[in-house]
Image (cartoon, rainbow, N blue to C red; front, top):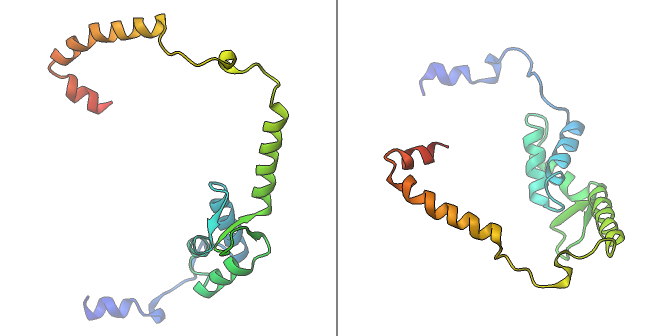
Length: 150
């Protein structure tokens, strides 16, 4: 890096305020929504990391650690306390279990309790058609290249 390039990086040379940065409270909400919208549990370190990503420029590493360790929205269910979830996630999982329990016995079991047998007339016909078409496809000069493009 040249001396001019280094000089341009000094804070005194930065003009104007940062734009479009998320406030800390919004960053917390976004981090929690992002993590628990995809998973029922998350590691404490992942919560802190996601907060740092969402609150870039506004959230310190220490603030992210404190959030992950002390925020009242989190519940620690494992003995080590490193895995956390939220009350909303637990409530959603309870509703799912209740829905499944309510539906038990409401419909006839698939296969009427019998073992499933996959061999059928439809499967046999499909296999027959595949055997008839496949050799022709393999002889086609552009078949392999065309198959990789789809």
